[in-house]
Length: 240
Image (cartoon, rainbow, N blue to C red):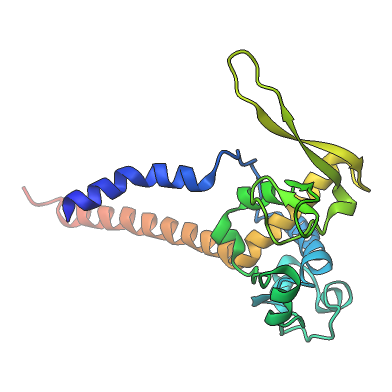
């Protein structure tokens, strides 16, 4: 059993590398302390993602922790008649999703914990036009994904170009912007970063408070350790 476990541990990096492919993930650089960025990301989510993807473990009232009021959430982020305490569910049935996309769109409540912020950031910027796919879109991070590029009007239309190999290199693919969108590349990247920041927040809304509480607990334990050491020294100062 020990030998089997050792071999599995040695092979795990190779297996992970093979599963992850050769795509280099870009850094998302999300910041869960940036409430304004998360607010913007929530707006992108409800406008472009919530039509197909539910977030059944996220309630609208958790957005109040970002500094929004109930009225702001109801006016700007709820378009379905849901109540402030309801979860972010959708009307599309699972069987309809399978019929339209070939697979039901997944719930995105914890997608950031499943995939990671860098994966999502690279994926949402990696769509390109591909007429051989049913949706007309493909992705460099997730080839043949069932999801179409719902943000193409913002980013524009990209094409995948294969650059010829050099004398000592290999041919590699490169995304080229064929038709500009309504946003510049920098603005679109910022929008995707805000969206990923929201997805990261949605996966664990209490993460920032948990970290802050952890720091307070560690400071308290450090103070108590110092007081305990001083008390011990006082009790033992006359013992020779």
